Image (cartoon, rainbow, N blue to C red):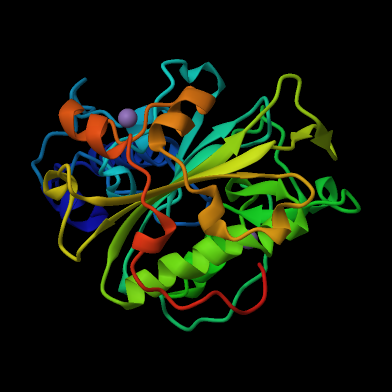
Amino acid sequence: MTASRTRRAPRNSLVGTFSVVVSLLVVARLALLQCSSLPGQAPPATPFSPSAGASFAPPSEATRPAPRGTEACVSSSVHVALGTPSDGDPSDEYFIDERSFVLSYSPEKRVPNWVAWQLDRQHLGHVRRRNDFRPDLALPARFYRVQDSDYAHSGYDRGHLCPSADRKDSAEDNSRTFLFTNIVPQLHELNSGPWEQLESYSRARVQAGALLYLVAGGLFSAPSPTIGNGVAVPVANFKIMVVLSPGQGASDVNENTELLAVLMPNQRGVGEHEWTEYLTTVDAIEQASGYDFLNALPERVQRVIEARVPAAGELRAGRRPSGRAH
Ligand code: MN
Ligand code: MN
């Protein structure tokens, strides 16, 4: 980029060339500061292309990258193709495009409000589980960054929202699921019980040919119990899963599209239950959380599919859950 640009710079003046290079670096640096996630990763594609022309004017209002942490940073991601969950109050939401998934983080509760991800077969590789739980440096320094010590001896597991096993295609992809912005305190019996059973079921559906759109998060009491340095413990976790086929997107969702929604208590005894006992409606989750989900779909489609609960007997075959909890 610098090479092609400098070729267009005035050749008769070293000073001129130098100032063009410096302004380019400044522009590139500013672009990096917008919507960026982890330092050291390549920045997300910026709306202005270096090859677009010889003009060095700053991007116009229309094409300028959205300020970090705003909804605009995630809304064009495939992971929220069916809608960016919205509760009409962005004051306690810091949005991050982690590329492997997107999320809204609550600086107040110190856990994600929700995490959304698309799951298809390409995500199910065989890389080793990284287990590198760590603070998310995409959060500005003014926010507390949750770390391992917050969960140590808390009695709660570091529960993934986007599961590690849903991102096995590359080491980087898997590693990002261990950012604490994707983690909530979950009782082990929930994490290793019905919550994990549903995770396994969704991967079995993908292995059988489905493309899934998932969103998961927590419900909180006010005031919320906390662990460590003020990390809120959800009273329940929800998950919404829309079942499509590869190549399909929002415009393919209709009144007959298969959808599953669950609400599982983060309470003692939960481990004795099957995940299918926690099936509910999206409407119930919307009411309890204050969020509107699937809001990119037509109102009439939302009205039908958000009110439907599949009977456990209607669920399509997925392998029976097995294996260890994560
Ligand atoms: Mn909705
Ligand atoms: Mn888990």
